[in-house]
Image 1 (cartoon, rainbow, N blue to C red):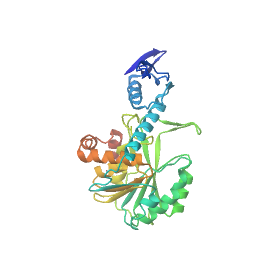
Image 2 (image 1 turned 120 degrees about the horizontal axis):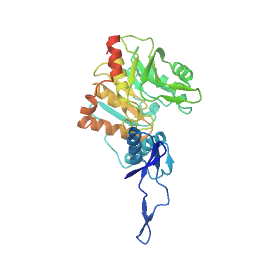
Image 3 (image 1 turned 90 degrees about the horizontal axis):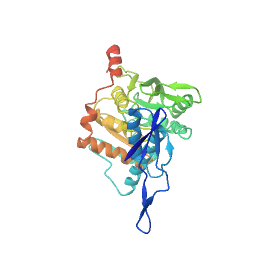
Image 4 (image 1 turned 135 degrees about the vertical axis):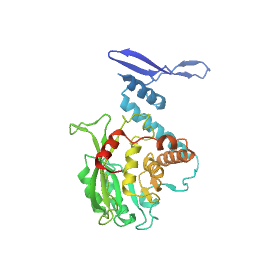
Length: 323
């Protein structure tokens, strides 16, 4: 149960004090302070309440809403990781297959030139950026000649990421963007309000165009826990569906070597493609499996499939004349 206490121009949203049971079977107030989040609007209060419900027992004291949501996503992923460790689960369906491990090992059996498109969001923090070179080599080997890899990329090391991809053997084709229409990301080290996400398009050898491409997608919403609860870096679904449509046709094979929360897998299946993906984190594989099973069962398919494209994207497409 959550309570709200007025504090200045905002509110403190938190849980009722927890109790513990002692060895004498009596209950006592818990010594650890329950988490409390400062909010300033009804919308913030809803997001804070969602975060409080998802936080694990280690959270305590006054924490910011964004930090609480981040910790809640980590808690959700940890729960999926624990479920994955309990026993084997069916990791394939009629048109999809998931694997656990490093893509250089668990996807090594993919034949040369067998993949129609790659759509992926690799890690691009300091520790993750070096993976761009072996990923580039993987894409150059597995993609059909002239086909595309759609690669989400970070701004701070974009030059290095591009150099590593080309060193891996793929060829630069284009630079797209996802416009972020919610709250902007503040890049404090550069004093920049980030209003878009970079998307790199690289081909296996010289690019062979099959259709006109739209290089802009739109991610509406505020990115709260209700919208993206599964992973610290969960991506919005509609932009990924956009890129899947741009670089492939129904029935073709989409691969993602870094499945994360499974958004590319869901987007591929919803757009009528086949899918193979992997992740080194069993929790990510389990999260993706659940989403695909729910999609097949129809519990999320109707909601997500009937979701209208964002109004900004519809407006852009009416001008550009593209899908």
